Amino acid sequence: MLNNESLKQLLEQRKALKHAVSPEEWAARVELAACYRLVAHFRMTDWIYNHISARVPGSHEHYLINPFGLLYEEISASNLVKVDVHGRLVEDVGLDVNPAAFVIHGAIHAARPEVGCVLHTHTLAGSGVAAQSDGLLPISQHALMFHGRVAYHDFEGIALDDEERQRLVRDLSDKDALILRNHGLLTLGRGVPEAFAFMYFLERACQIQIAALAGNASVTRPSPAVCDRTAAQFAGDDSSVQGRDWQALLRLLDRTDPSYKD
Image 1 (cartoon, one colour):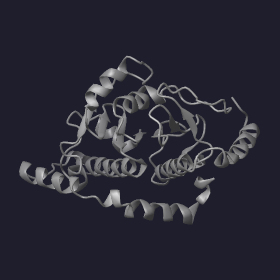
Image 2 (cartoon, helix red, strand yellow):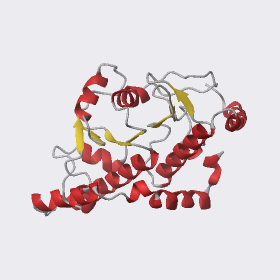
Image 3 (tube, one colour):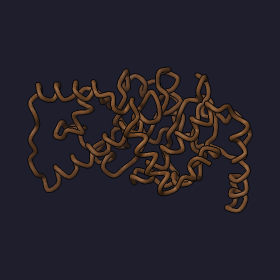
């Protein structure tokens, strides 16, 4: 393990990576680093743990992920590391990854080639809903974004067992949101912006549910027909694909700390 001074020097040296990778890979690195910073900004982190992974453009074998030991607010384009579907470093870069990362991430990337980004959190609200037997309830507009679109996977312990990969992929099926029972949340996207948008609104839905159920309060639920209609409305909304929301979030980062681009 590197001491802080050695790590600082290594990360500074890594900034030269911009000139050693393709423009497409560098753009993907900047986008993923922005996602890490946004997750930190919206307080969805868990110290140095958890992961967001993104496929390297043009590759079905290599992915970008955070080096183990950095806080999300420290992630930048150059210090992301490249791994294969088993979580093995593609290059000897003096950094390493958390082995738990690709029990989950590697399994999903391998099974779902259309997925460009996988995002996992252990937030208070998300983990709270993951502990509730009924899971995500259709009691808010945010929750109805995921009506019929969220899967569940039972807790099997810390995600270190390769045998769990098959069961996780089976439970996820074709869904883009997964509640890991007694654990946390996971979202998928064709790209980084979509995965982040799904996680942000899934997290908000969980926050609303925890607040609504506080004090053992009773809650109202829309009719099944309204739930179906609202979910269909969300499915037909392509605003995230158009990128207006993502560009607004990048402006937020650029105003506060643009070092994610380094």
